[in-house]
Length: 124
Image (cartoon, rainbow, N blue to C red):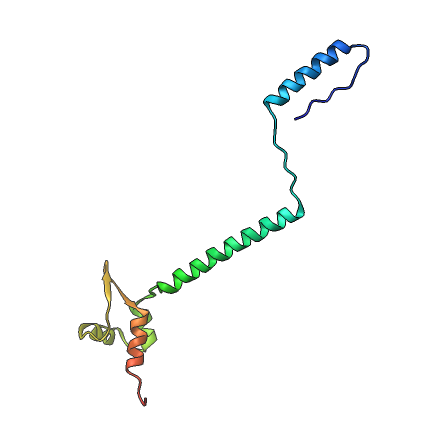
């Protein structure tokens, strides 16, 4: 912050004193002022965009390495295969379809179901 005061020629001693106080206070609370140009803003924008692109690429790379498992419930598998609850149970019991049971709910990996469909294709 700068000090501003109108000069009063009738009170030179006060003006001189006020000027010395302002100079001392400016020494203690100097703020650094920077001028930001359009080019600076453009460089900043490009740096942010480049950083975001790197983050996006890393996320895409990580997601392609670890494919997310999609789990299905029994009624979804029944609809997918067009089978009854009893047939699905028989397929579980005889080991045709792998499954996981958590808290009484049975889950199936969608990829396992798709693999079973591919393995049982006719006229290949």
